[in-house]
Length: 276
Image 1: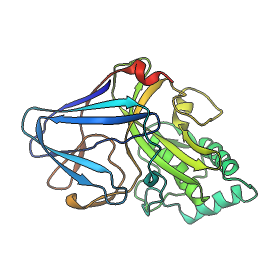
Image 2: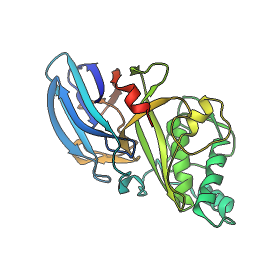
Image 3: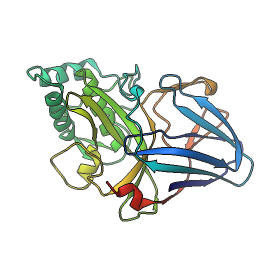
Image 4: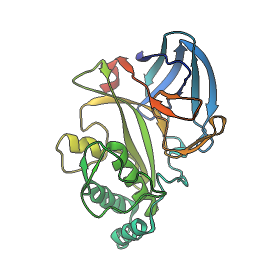
């Protein structure tokens, strides 16, 4: 069995929120055990995804997921457009995208064009998102520094402006050189065209110095498990709407402030996950 353990120290006066994970064609969660707090479950209204809220009762909170290889097709809600500031394309971007693909007959040809176009606009790196403080995804006209989140959000906005079904997925990525642990999350794009369902990871192509972007996961060697999908979350029981996403356990305070948690992430079963 493949096991993912995520642990963190408790914080006084805060509640911990975490997505519970979902099945992909590659790997499926079969159980989740939460320790160190009282749990209740809430739902994101646009996608139906489940969120667990944990109120600490001790010094440490831990999550243990069990996974098996082979899961379900990506759920339909992954591909559904959301009226969110994180994926809504500005009119200038819509116009540019439609001009780029106007002479192309198939969605697959359009997608290939857009993937190359987006890859050519970014230099991989972290910092303040270029769309911070906006109500829509702005058009980029120059080389821009962006993380995997930024690159994928832009690709999805472009795809949807062209009428191509696309979705954002995020989860834990365990690189080959570490095998049993990681310190971060990662995200990727899933598309659905006449070529079928494809997964794209432009950021990892960039990190590996691979200029020709191809569909498929892990141009950077490693394994991944999905935790959540889509941007623009609304959780009525928390009184929040159109937040970017909930990808990993995060602290939520009574004054509606958020804080990233310091996570200890460990995996058992790397070889099972990396076997085709």
